[in-house]
Length: 115
Length: 116
Image (cartoon, rainbow over all chains, first blue to last red; front, side):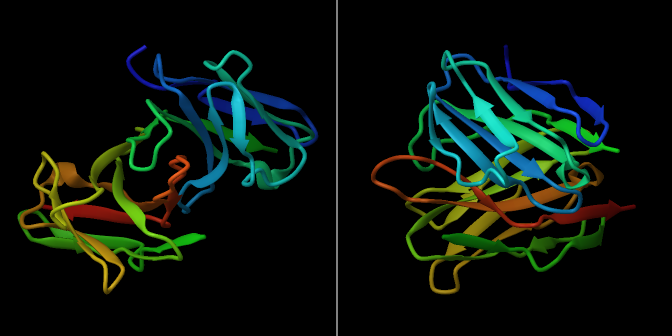
């Protein structure tokens, strides 16, 4: 597609429920990122893939968060046993290459509300 | 590690007036600098970036930003704003790494509200 596509756009989950958020990066983009944006805050880095390899997962807040990109294209961010503090917008982004300064393109985000 | 500070959470301004959105950063290594814009109900879009060369960079819609290494700043300016510039603006940095990797660290954003 023309841009980074994320689904679902909106998700309401009951506390304790598992959720899966999907990201389709721009075709051919090597690098893929997940960010978390809480209300009134800037995006915060969660994890980074180069092709199928997860090179950095230092931003994942707990072991309830898991991300994968098995074939180097589509990625899924999974949150197990959701908590209220997980409520945020989850942004996926991709770039053609992984070098510093390469433009990163963002999707519109998946809005997660945990009730 | 890097950090980005945007001191102004909201900046109201009248149409056709000039505006400056401030950004300061801290980093133990050299960085590239970016401004992203988020219009209502849309995703983040790159506005402009500084990689090297002239410290003054411009966007296609009249914004400009100047990299000041001594003051570790990258302030965004526009001499005359339009109502359509109403949006949230995020400053971000990415460390210059020989091994690659272009993770961004963002500030908390500045909401620009242009009024008639």
